[in-house]
Length: 324
Image 1 (cartoon, one colour):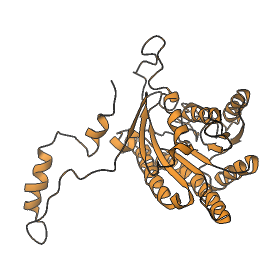
Image 2 (tube, helix red, strand yellow; image 1 turned 180 degrees about the vertical axis):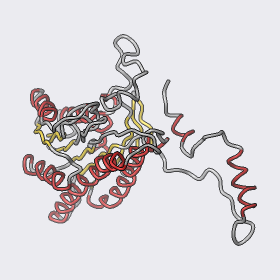
Image 3 (cartoon, rainbow, N blue to C red; image 1 turned 45 degrees about the horizontal axis):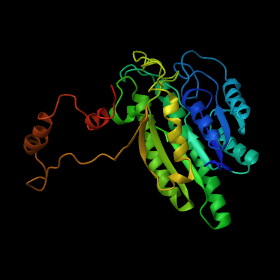
Image 4 (tube, helix red, strand yellow; image 1 turned 180 degrees about the horizontal axis):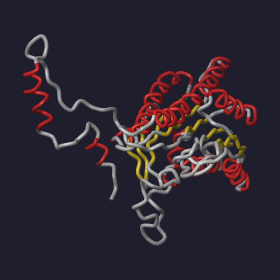
């Protein structure tokens, strides 16, 4: 039986551990040749650029990427490792060029690299803000920019659409807010905007772009899910295991998902939720040419006075996705 990704080439960033590692293995299992990218440093409080790392700091190491690539080859797949910081423009170009040079072309890009620098907004430093936005948002842009150019050039050369899939990694921190992560929430929101813009721009070339909001227990999220049991019952799969997320990435990367474009999916524990753009909850028109303060107070003010204290535009929708 032919595997769904046979003959295709994938790049997965931040694939040395956690989500990226699970995604790289899934793509290889489905038949893709995989370029395993990782910067090889811890991502929670350190200087790593790999989603799923946690704690500490240190020099960049090829070991995580090399280890995952070796695991894939040992299982009979094709994979090579790439050590590099995708937040660097030239490095991202080299990563995309490597995939094309090694395997003949690029077909799938999974952007997963990221770091955390958690702090409340009133305590956050400029460097903590810049570092997270740089790695998450610029890192996604860099690889997407060069992959998009690769596919556009191929389409122009053949005069026909090509095969291309982008899967970006956003977060529920963007959807519902996260008090101690203003930098992370902002970067993840930016990734959604980048994804929808890219989806519109590349559709005519045969390329799709989608984003996922995964909930998974990794080294980078070890503090977030510290109070939740890893093994809910004997023999059960941890509902926060990255292995719940990887199959969705594999599907989005496949020919079967050709109709899925510009979408945002929340994924965890055997659940996929397709999100909508924010809808209008209430609408008020002025009785005059321009609103007065009193009119706004009696319309808009009354509307919010009737709602639960602290309720945000997304809180009710996002909370319905959570499992106890």
